[in-house]
Image (cartoon, rainbow, N blue to C red; front, side):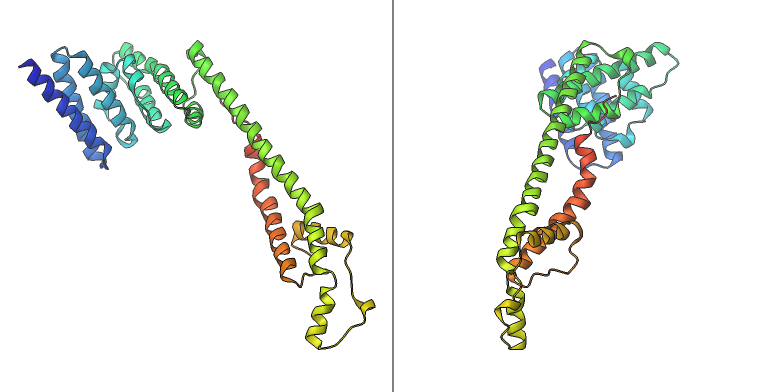
Length: 291
């Protein structure tokens, strides 16, 4: 009989966990969480510690995915009275939001027993520690950063492990900023070379004397060679800078297909640089606050 009961409990837990993985309404998820609480009472009554922990961990994951029902008094009481610190260690958190939901539920628990309420609040640093460690092992530093930003840990609750995790994030953030700076500087260098050297020379190559050729074809006349306008590098440089900075003044206009392609490319680069890159510079090169 004990073996049959254990198998039945395991199958029931497997079924509930599988149900929580699918799309559920708030009411459906609430019903499953209540069933997990009932199942925990059954396995706890039979001193099945391993099964009880699996039920509690399934409850934590299920509640973390449903912030809309996290303020349920019964759920908060179960968290405060039944959850153990060791339960946090085996949970594979998917997002920082799940951890935040559990932390808010623990902080929001109120009871006439001050000791129980304080115990629930004391679980939060442990929850954050295990969640941060899980994200660190998975290499998900953005989730670590989001978690620390949204659930700051008071200095009085910091210990050596939390300080290590925070310092690891500082190092990650510093490397992120340096990497983004290199990308930004590389882009600016390439753009400067294109605007100051490549595009002026290409423009001169395509456009030299082509305006007069276009006039001759349109008017069906032959212009004398001395009337042909030949562009210098200085003309090409002037046109390139003005086009990149302000989409051009129109005093020098490309008439060939190649010249127009260069103008379109250069104008697009100018718009991107002024409109988009300028807005990203502050975000890219400014370290995000972890405090």
